[in-house]
Image (cartoon, rainbow, N blue to C red):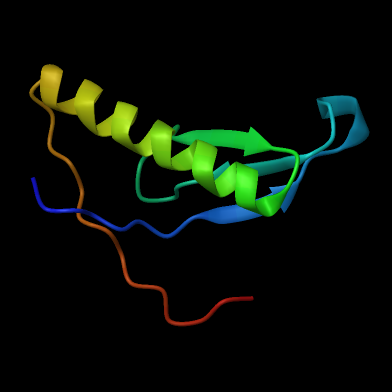
Length: 73
């Protein structure tokens, strides 16, 4: 399978949510993970992406292509 690269948004979690950082994949609804550092959140979300794609394939659903990011804020 060709490697797909999806944009990831990393943002801080509140103390009420346990702290750390949340990594979400806007192109893949509900695909997210977390970590204590940006690097950890990014590594963890890569596993979530692979699991998301595998589940979509198992269910016979389309896998959206990665969108392009014009700018990083």
